[in-house]
Length: 314
Image (cartoon, one colour):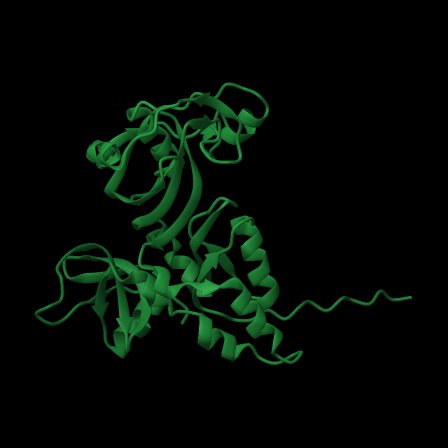
């Protein structure tokens, strides 16, 4: 008997960004898996992981948007987080075990007085329970096995740090705008120690990643409900139109070079083109060429010539 081949699930061609408001209690990969089951994309990835206990901005890239992921991940991030005073945990959040306690409770004035010390380029020791590799292994795997993990301090950029409110004497809510590689849990730990107390993060919400913020976020249940209203086999064009942002929305901070239709065709074939016009730059390390509002390729400009490095298939 001949073996019947199982039909492959149809994959949808989707190009663009979905900015998910990740709910509490699931991993970023779990959230990604839910979206795959709803949209069945050909290619998808996320820009920056959120812990299961964190909520908020999780940009998901589909198709050609995956080529812009590094630019989003390198962008600034904004977090709002609650610190509970009096106890430090080995994970610096609610997941871990208490390793130190203090009876001291800082006032709002005490907190505001030290925030400048944690703003700018500062040195930070990442949490032992982090994804940083130590001799080829993840730090959190070693820590869970009971090993003592000692990570070296490294520079981070905190552009803004402010006190939002103090709901009571045991808690403070802060907001931080920071660069890549910043651990908010470690920031809370260090602020607590500076205030001669102990503390850990009890709530964490990401408000912004690169160009994507709260106004762009999509509720997962809203997407699930919209998908459930589709008939079996019905195209997902409506979902894409409602929830997916254009690829170029991730490129707001990258210089754009507008080219003609003829030059766009050459660039798509990997050819360099000479830029014309008074506004054309002579040199640019990172930029992208576009035609009629559609990204054509990433590249660089050298001596007035655009040199494509990665072409979009849009």
